[in-house]
Each structure stands twice: as C-alpha cells, then as structure tokens.
Length: 331
Image (tube, rainbow, N blue to C red; front, side):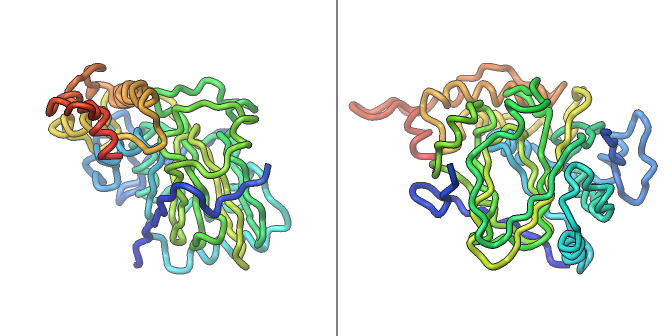
C-alpha cells in the first residue's frame, strides 16, 4: 500500500494566496484487541501498539508549530469511494457528517489517527458536536485568515498554554498547490487576534501550504491561524473537518515518552521558533511552550525556567547577543 506523504511548501513574501476581503466517545483503540476499555487502558494500548503513538519529538513539534500530519494506510480505493459519496450528496450535511457518511469512521478509528489524537488529547478524548464538509469548486475564491469560533459560538475557555481542542482535516483526494490548499501560520495558536484585523492580512512570513496526497489527515491546534486558498484548478477540492477535545488531564504522558529525551525537548522548546515571531514575541512564547508541555505531560513536567539556551560564546563587538544570534541563524 502506498504510504501517503504530506508535502508542505514553505513560503514567504509575495505568494499566490490572495484572499477576499451529541458528543460521541470514540473507541479508544483498534488493534488486534478491540476490548481495551479498562482503567489500565493506556498501558495496555502502549504495550499493544506503541508505534502508533507520537514520540517526544513529534509532540514538541506540535507544541511549537501547532499542527501534525497523519498518514493512515487506507484500503485501495477507499478515498475514491469517499469522493464519490461526497459528489452524490444532494446538500451539505452540516454537523451530521458521520451519520450521513458512516464510512468516515474508518478514518476516525484508524490506529494511526487514534494514536495521534490520544497522544495530543489523552486517552479519553471525544469528538465534539459540529464539523463541516468543505467543497471548493474550481475558481472558488480564498478565505480570509481566521481562528475557528474564537469570538463565535462555544469554545471560549481555550488556553494558549495547553492542548485541549483540536481540529481534524481529512483530504480524500490529492491537493496540489493550485487546488486551494489550506494555509497555516505555524506558531500562531498562541496569538489571539480580532477577526476584523485578520481579514485585512494576505501573505504572512512563514505561512505553510498543505499540499497533501489523498488520505492525509491534518491535525491542528484549534486556535491556529488558517485559511482556505483559492482553487485555480479545474478540479473540486474536498475536505472533511471535525473537532475533538480533551476530557481529562494527563497523569503521565499519553504519548511514547522517554525521559532521556527531556534535555533535547527543552532545548527545542527554548530555542526553536517559527520565523513569524519577533524577538519580543519569542521571549514570551518559549515560556508558554514549556507550560504547554507541562500541562500535557503530567508527571513528566519540567522546570518552568531554564537559561541553558542563553549559553555560548560571548557576543562580538557590534554583533548580536548569543540568544538572538542563535534565533537569527536557526529560524
């Protein structure tokens, strides 16, 4: 089976993104044993299917950037059947996606998807009411930048130093750069902006276009800045979007954690940053990242403050400080 690989096109400057101004608990795991529902579920899951959980490096990347891509290996022809079903729908089912399109459960219950959601939201995550099928016909105009429901209905209690809510985006067909791929701004999940301000923005430094192969699943922090770009192709682009939430705090990491990785994780949280951040924003942001790790990791929390990233050679006369030079040279 061909492995679906997501190709992200990193872009900055002037680009072809010109926008116009009853909760259901999922089965927690599906391996050879589908009865893992006891209080010891996480350890059983870890022993049965550890490779489907995210690792420390992937969790760190999500905390920094706000997104993760899953590549579920689906049965040959599955994505085409989903597209056929979408084309035959007389109207958009709104939030009743799973009831109208029960085959989507194959994606929702796929071990790779469940493993990623478990890693990010804990073993008792739920699928929230809501969701939407995006259908972008040819020559559809772009959306403006936005954060989902930030000032609208619900989800007003979200935190910038935790991962409590995610959005899952499943693409049943290849998405090329002319089909209106979703554009994300890495690291923006900790930047809360008024909608009237965001709609005035066009191309942003560091923006990422999600050009994906059929079957790819994009998991994003609920608050990440994103938009659908214009479809300049002669093909329809479909995307199924569903929200998920955490229901309880972790006592221990819900991902494949190794305590030996903590120094490297800490260095990345302290020193790595998306190119969208100014120096002042970065100084605040790295502390929020550590608090996010701690809120997710339970017993694997780390000290909030660390000055290790400030070490290194003394600055040269007239040059940048060690910390700012490292940020400059390693964006």
